[in-house]
Length: 66
Image 1 (tube, helix red, strand yellow):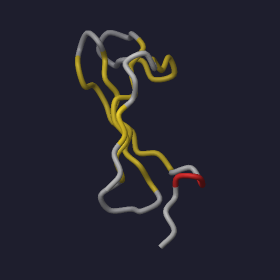
Image 2 (cartoon, one colour; image 1 turned 30 degrees about the vertical axis):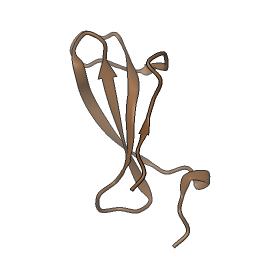
Image 3 (cartoon, one colour; image 1 turned 180 degrees about the horizontal axis):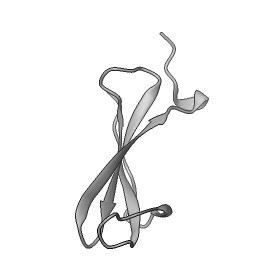
């Protein structure tokens, strides 16, 4: 199982907090539990805490060969 932690300085202005509208941090990348070609990205807000997760298609460089 692959998990990654993002640095606290990697703010993502494309994904603002849905509660307070400040930029969030990509806090975690985990494999999707059912689909091998997708990852789950967890975003963290400095004010509100963990606020959302997005399911994204894996990039070709991060895909595992089966």
